[in-house]
Amino acid sequence: MHIYININNKKINLDYRELAEKMWFKSYKGKELELSHIGNTSWLNENYRLALKWDKWGNDHRWSTNDAVKSFSDEYISLDPIRENSVMYIETDHVNIVQVDFRALCIMTKELAEAVKGLISDDAMKTWLSLEEFEEKYNTVLDMSFENANDQSLNEVLDLDMEVIEEPWDNEVKYD
Image (cartoon, rainbow, N blue to C red; front, side, top):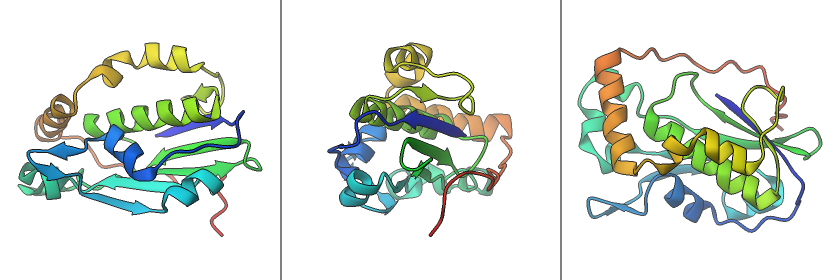
């Protein structure tokens, strides 16, 4: 999945850990968020680069119960600048992502768009949504609790036989 945010305010002040805790949770069943990340707060604020992944099996043993579930337990949500730092590009590792990661993606998008005062595109920059329009379009997901999204995700994987489809590497990010 790909999301684009145009950057109108170049200076942002977000903490990567606080962002991740908004995306997933601060504490779940008495344990802190198990998080893998590439980048940190300064990378996020100075370069608009960050990759976050909730290590699902570290907080919820149900994510390590069988191969079908394990195949959806690793999902990085990555942020990179494109077009000479005028657009933020957010992508996931896979085309099909489970609800708990989709919710996290929507929350990340909302938080970043608010910070840069940018418009959002979820259709390869064909159309642009204001933050309010994005929140309205995805209000069901944004209003969903972490626990509900997590349970729904486990059910999706077990009941729907979701297929793991890698996201293609054809994007504008310069990996240097």
